[in-house]
Length: 307
Ligand code: BDR
Ligand code: CA
Image 1 (tube, helix red, strand yellow):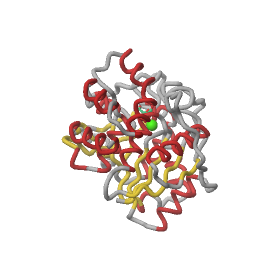
Image 2: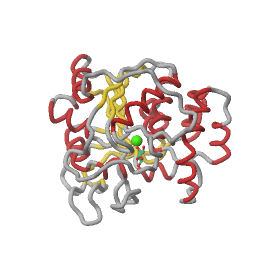
Image 3: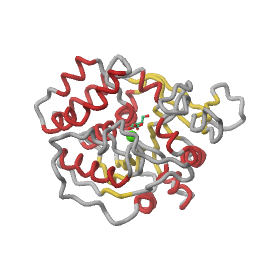
């Protein structure tokens, strides 16, 4: 599998990237960065640090700094000031990003190997929408497009109560992306809520004796505190679940294919994914919505990446 990852890293993004880098038979050929959890100028060094930890060489590209239209400033602090949990033992990186813009890199790669790349998006879809706009043939050249984002039943995690964070950040980009790709795979916030790792299992992973595990434990403290303050029943895995189903589609236990679009207005609902479950809109289904995942299989991927 030839993989491109678009990310707003992000603690769970970092884990998803680690999972891909450790997966046999997968080459991560580019990582493109976008503003989301933190500004893209913080996302880039975060990704470079993940590559240091995993001793991997992958070109990294800086992408969009702002959403297409939305009047929204990043820095939500859920992932700490630096976006990687403000880990006090964080080592400095000597690596640098490429000079090419992320959107140009996405288009160049897709054109160089049409039908070859799996694209996994872990943040707001700004870079992806721009690639689709700049080169309308871009979606047809991507083998499979998987994204973490959206809600299946309007149970969001943002001030717009029904919207999930990645879509909330840039609703227009998500709208354009879903319209452009004939078939996307979506891993939603509710599917995330339904597939945590239990705390004993999570703690066992953190206690693995490896640089990757020490990094994961050191960077994830702020999200552990946040998740526990909300009394969720385990460690949540939004981006890692999306990556897991991209790497191993047989981990999907239940799914459905529906027409999905994005609410762009709505006093309370801007950024909500709208799903035509009963095929009433007349639109062709465009999104493969993942509903159940084999959590034990995802756990095995974590063990693999932390070994
Ligand atoms: C998504 O928002 C971000 O905070 C996470 O990295 C994930 O991509 C979950 O809603
Ligand atoms: Ca993310």
